[in-house]
Length: 97
Image 1 (spheres, helix red, strand yellow):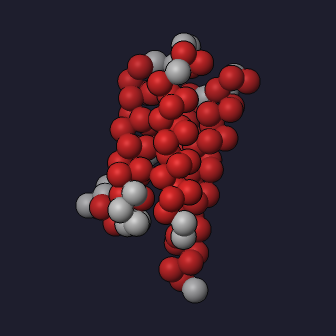
Image 2 (spheres, one colour):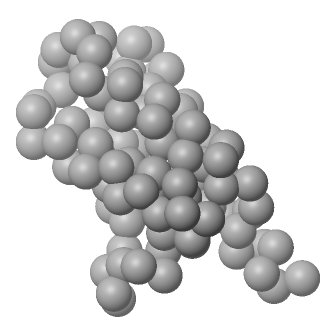
């Protein structure tokens, strides 16, 4: 797994959440996803699988974004969020091989 790519992908989501593009999305939704991306980026920067630092919890950003993001502008950030998920899935598939 390329943790640098994961960090960069999480950073892109953070930057999009901080932009004014999602004016219709609640601040709580944006903050929840942003906090999770900050967490992912923090550990990816250390070359650590962020999921092992969850202490039994799970990421919820995928569920939140699926429910909340549906307009054309929001689909752009949804795609960035999906990229983060795909990279985390690659970590799992690489560990199994």
